[in-house]
Length: 166
Image (tube, rainbow, N blue to C red; front, top):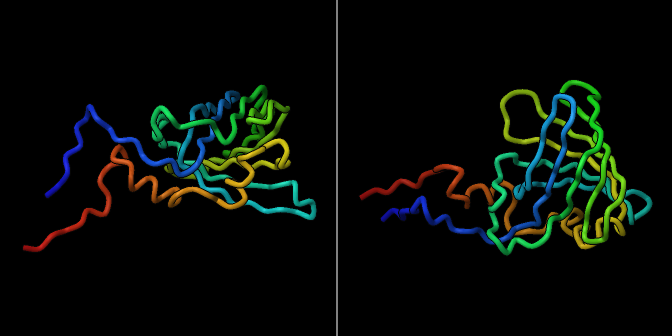
């Protein structure tokens, strides 16, 4: 028997990872929201306290995916200046806000060609700036992943509907 989800009652999902909040405004880009579904590829250099990461973010991940008790963000980035650095590529300067405090920061944003719900931010950050979020970026911790969380969310539509035979 199929389950019916009332439009008035949307279940909250178990928290897989901390959301990333972005407020990037300038030129021909406006990217603003608290994004829950993301996947990071990270690398450490010779200085193990510095991390370079590319984070693919699902722009359709709703702000309230984890409910009221979502806790803090992995980080918040607010731009003060945004410059185009090529086709669908931008360099944003501003401030990074983490539980450790607020620091001047720079990151790059790439928007893939074609129709897609994803965009990529790239950043280099030190462990002491990111604080507890460091482990989430290095290990990719959290339940499932970007696709697993999407499949659990009833608001993203029906996918891979199971068929039954009588």
